[in-house]
Length: 171
Ligand SMILES: [Ca+2]
Ligand SMILES: [Ca+2]
Image (cartoon, rainbow, N blue to C red; front, top):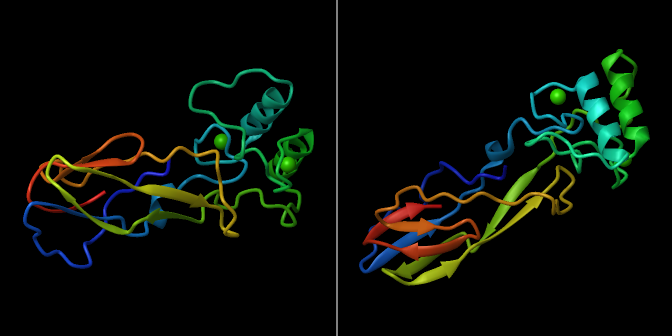
């Protein structure tokens, strides 16, 4: 989901003895995730409404589907039958502009620190905060970390960075 990828180093200077790591803002990281698209196929459809209802009654959804918060299309903080009804209303062309259905789920990802230095074999931890378009924290995402060049630094699934060589990369 919140994948940090790509980007340009603001100061691409080589660093002796370790890796300089930076995490530039990457709004595109969450492209495609919108409110109402529970199955993640890029469109808000009847399937999504049924998935919301499935979730509301406590049944498991297929792997990769997520009703919370994707299914919360009125942005009231919970996924209910009202959300399913709003999705259905949008599918049949009703005016649902008063709700947040179809809006991007993630407004941004903030990573701190945005630039760090680590010695080879040393480690440091990055923290990512995902926010919605209104700036409120979204806690249901687990950021996915990747190193731009594992010759300089690696990063594990928790954001723990290990210096592996002399140079600079991004995470
Ligand atoms: Ca869908
Ligand atoms: Ca709701």
